Length: 444
Length: 148
Image (cartoon, rainbow over all chains, first blue to last red; front, top):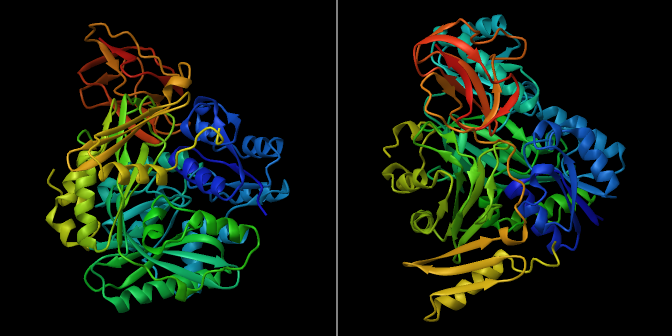
């Protein structure tokens, strides 16, 4: 039974977690950096504990500081959100040693999936197909592995997620410079510079499956398509994955459930696949052992509150949902509103938000921590809000997205709103089922 | 604090539904803690929250914008963030005093919002002075180096 919940995160996801926790009658304690002691999540939480200075390395990423703050606040559970410490096994262990419930999977699952190389190995053991590739601890190893894998290839951070530290390399001449950048970003974002090499599949779609497990049984909550990305950063996500044969969709969902069972997974997770846009052959990429940024689209079509499910499972309950109870209905699309100048190479745009007007009507959900008079700080990532639209059909959802974006105004910082307007009006997006090269072909 | 903040997203949807069936154009409520304005906007509705009145001054970012003088020799920070002089810890710096650069030469990296942004010299010449220290926060337009 979770009574006092400590939220070890910030931004929109902290606010989203606090809202469900308060509805369930928990006392919420937000662990905030000094720079964010007056943030909207801080104002909404029942209590605020300062976990360190502005820099994430000294606050949101500090295992010792977060544990100390949670203990001092007498929390009996910690929700790590996404990013930061959410998939850090050492953190999960420290939480357990402090006698606090970790709202996330068992440490064994974090070990199995926290590292992309290990994830490949476990995926193969569970009988899932994987993309050709291998590790590259340094430049020499990367060169050798690249010769085996062939170009074009991807460099990925071993400890990564969210596209950080991921680089596409089209030829041998680019390898050295790209590996430097990839390792520097991997070090900065995850504290682990290791990268690995993977074959780049040209016409691929990014399709993922939301799963829930209680350690014994496992179910899926359908597919999400996140193929619209720029430099491996997701821009648009939708549920279910459009324009995909039903038998292939069922096969991917079953593979995800098989992996979840193989791991005796406890909690909410996402199994990511690369899907060939023509043959619909699929390859297991990794499993994200946490809640994801794009979880609201699955919630919109299934009616399940995934954060609530995380608590029920973390509290020791068996899954109360069965596969038969999950009947996805309609279509949902999420776009990420980032404080970036998308026309200047997506340069981050920190600063004061003089006005934030978000669309409001039935079928629209806004997950944001940004209000008029707020500030986008230079210390954290650029996501300032998510617009989620729901329609009875995909066509209806696409139309609703276009009109909702007409009623969204952020002043003071640059945002990706107009990029999303261009996407919503793009003929390829309107017909659905685009591959990950969509962004390169976008005329905006 | 939760006991104070009483309106949920569902409440906002309800307010929109009520207004939509009326001739009202706007709902504007201000309390000691927040202001919410729900307004008709063409064929749709917007919601605008403001929590800033009760936060005296707030806590602004540590970055202090530098005074921008008209100085063609300055290489300025294109955006605020943490300035690094080398591509990775322990690696040689991109440039030193005396380095010859052209407009495209990378002279450092600024880490902002988890991204590494290369800083280019922007002009040809020789680095004459390095003002920004490695690993320190710099404001937008702060002078990082000078070119002679």
